[in-house]
Length: 168
Image (tube, rainbow, N blue to C red; front, side, top):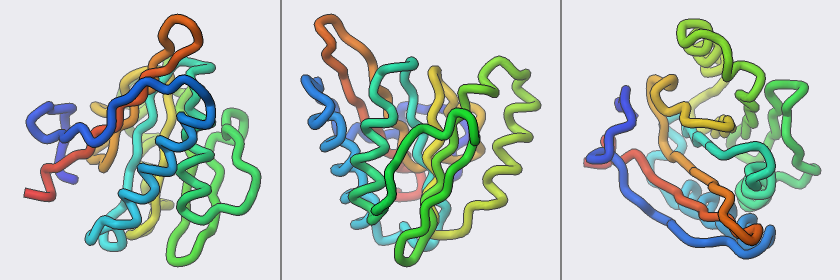
């Protein structure tokens, strides 16, 4: 996770499909959960998942699938007003950060906020940061980027990319 920029040569597409329903979007989140659980180094790093998509695109639906797969039993909703919501599961914490309120701040303020949030994330934990636009350049490192786009007829495209710079 030593990537400072969103470089295509350090990314591997691991999922790209159209989603015709909320259930399918939730399934894509569960798929990412399985991938994270199968990673050999998942317990020795901070697992950063960047979730990008406009308001109403299905970010929370995707998050429900991901977090349920990782063991969350609680009701999962967007932390828009609380900024950060944490869920304890066996062996780790899951942190859900909503970046929406900071999207218009200057880049320096955004990076300071991210640095503060990352201090609360321990090795093995998962931080899911959601935003309405690209935020990869703001994070010093990340593990996965998920982009959800709204298509005509209420269809979504879901793209999951993995940062492979540490896997080489």
